[in-house]
View 1 (cartoon, rainbow, N blue to C red):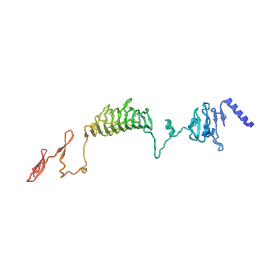
View 2: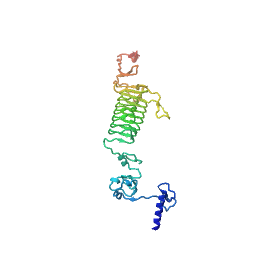
View 3: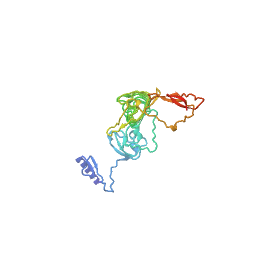
Length: 364
């Protein structure tokens, strides 16, 4: 007992003289430094704080004066309330002046989601991922540029700018520039349905798939744009379908058209030093697409050769129901004309020939 008092007195004197305490060291580098014996297999290195059950810790009321206290909770608290609301599992806890918090901040995903904070937890899904959302909740897997006040919106990326819109879905940095107030829009790809800087996208039911698809749109409705830089510059037009690289895109600037169809693939030059690759021969009119049309005026144009597979066509030889022929104008438009064939003479041998563009029976 006498030796213990001497050791304690020596420790107190050392503390007073040097203001720093060292265990197993003569030159502590901090207020308290503990040096272990890693080479001694019979020496168990480490510091063990007070061990206590969650229920016993719940019976104690700590104050701000105990802020920073450390304990090791051996079993979780039965009633997760008050200062022990976080004592869900065994582990090391620190008192922050109000509650006991786990020293290791790898919170369960559910707790993180309820707090709206981030977590270092890695989520690995091997079979099924089931997320239970209420009907009007917004689903964000990533980060949104704005607070979403609308309903049924989903974001599968970062930087999207959906605000009061409803039923919108954005992935891979789509819808990131203009503020989305419209509804039922879908954008997938960098800058798809992107809008204009500091602008508003009030259009509805638009679909943009591909990097830059339907960029700079503002108020157009019911557009479908699929392909790299397809439908760009069409800000206020509606009811368009653009399919293919650069399909339906003007050479530069704003062009708004409606009810149009363009199917095309424009050559692109890949530039390893730039994020965006340039379209090498962008056209100024959607009619330059290989296939173009107008849904309202009900016409379709093919900007190239038209051919069919003969073996897939019906055999019209000897079929009297085929009474029409296909004729064409100089501008390339087609039409049907009635084929008028005069009856053959009753006597003699004749063959049917074209005479000055008209069918005529000629004696053989």
